[in-house]
Length: 303
Length: 241
Ligand SMILES: Nc1ncnc2c1ncn2[C@@H]1O[C@H](COP(=O)(O)OP(=O)(O)OP(=O)(O)O)[C@@H](O)[C@H]1O
Ligand SMILES: [Mg+2]
Figure 1 (tube, chains in turn green, brown):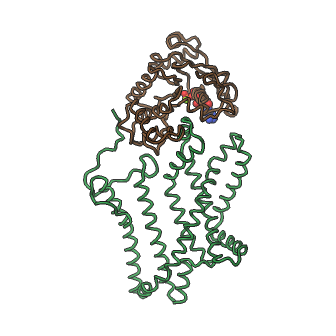
Figure 2 (figure 1 turned 135 degrees about the horizontal axis):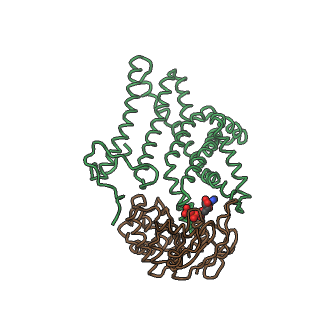
Figure 3 (figure 1 turned 180 degrees about the vertical axis):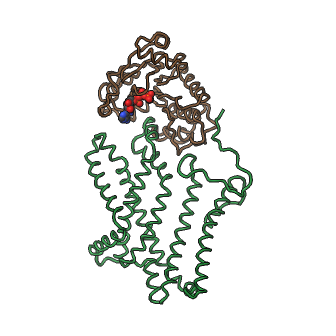
């Protein structure tokens, strides 16, 4: 759906695009067919009521928007903070080992960052959310929507820990040779980071970063427990006030899928479209049903 | 033009350079040979301050540059470098690899930078590959782009660290061809290489390094035909086969 672009079968590129669409709509369709068949069977068996779901799904729209908004804000704020933390994690030990003047600042910063990352990764998100929410709602009682913002804060604190590690790995995957080359033409450290390290590592970490967003979105379900009116809260409320919990939770699951599948499809499309040979995702596999093989890539030795 | 005076370097407890002196005059080609691990790369990297010497001086046009008052970035603009493993920026096309230094280091407008970059790619015979990414180029082509990248900044000298060691014979010829043309045009060059043919044809002086010291120096004719030390004799007979 989101992948359809341009005239079909317009030469080689068009054919490859068709193949991507076939593959991904295939996956999407498979998921939808699976769920619909399951629901119809359960409906026939009298276990769930499809009419109930058709009637009540609009009740979940606003809570879905809340979950999406909370996750996105947390993710973006987390991203901005995680980049410098990832830098400290990736390059801190090196600065300290070289006994550079910055060590005085970097050494404690590295220690703190590492401690933070370990604390976040080593405890359940649920515990973090309960703890931070309790603290934040106490500290800011009376503010409008204090539960929601406390929840967003908890998600942010959580995602920083994971994203910092994604960035660390991304930065470390850029080889010393690239940095040496950039130095050798007289680039300054910040220029090397902005024009060489960051663009290369972003391509490499696009996928783990997407996974982190998806994980965070699913973790936002836990905010139900701290009184945020997100999807899980809505499903629970609907299910038990209308005495149709199974239908309600099916709807909840459906909403998560509806957001996550197009997102991950969109990202992998972007990844292929913005692909640079030799970086990140491997060359797209050729469509099985799409006519003759394209000509050899220009990797052949030159004149 | 470039000189090293009493340069020492330690990596931890490993004493890699043990008081190295060298001088390269403007327009000269200096070739450094020696066994693996003798410190050739480290010496070369000291000359553009990719490695900071622990003792001794690096001089460019008589000015000491391994000094807190001199920005290493400035030094590296004056002295280009070509690496064994090419190290082209993988996310940039051949043209962009050459352009980036002009844009970000020399702060040139894009149009000027692209014009110069294309001219440099032409010089190494790769104008038609301007839009290719490094992964789409052969090793020899990548190395020629790397040479163009170094030349674009109009350096006073270029350092080459085994520029052909990772290449097949065909590509070696391409790259050596470009380097010989450069030498003919009067570029000052310091070249670590095991290509004795290249050294014999273009080197004004050859240094033989072993264990972090320069054991012998002379014209290629002298050094290859009549090595004085046992180490150099063994090395020469091994490399010349
Ligand atoms: N950054 C570094 N940290 C620690 N040791 C290093 C570092 N760089 C080089 N060395 C060591 O210094 C010694 C000299 O290395 P160098 O690369 O200068 O030798 P080389 O003569 O260029 O060898 P080759 O012909 O194999 O390239 C080696 O023992 C190497 O292991
Ligand atoms: Mg070396």
